[in-house]
Image 1 (cartoon, helix red, strand yellow):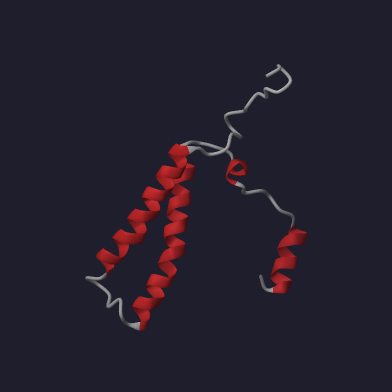
Image 2 (cartoon, rainbow, N blue to C red):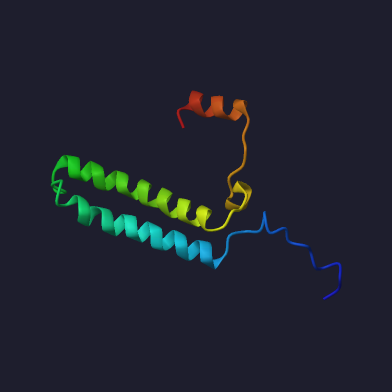
Length: 98
């Protein structure tokens, strides 16, 4: 391996590794499995409202996992694949309903 093959990796833009992955999975599992157990005392999960709660739970658990991974190490948003967009693309999304 020559010196041209090596690149300097900036720690602020380095990709997330195993610690972030494990933290995200643990947080997602804690919310995804723990919240229904806690909510089952307050809410009938077999009712339509309970079904709506469980449907929204997958999104909430995913966001909790991402938040845990992002909070573990202070990294740039670009390292997680989040990039800034322009107003043109936002309006295009609003206009097409996506």
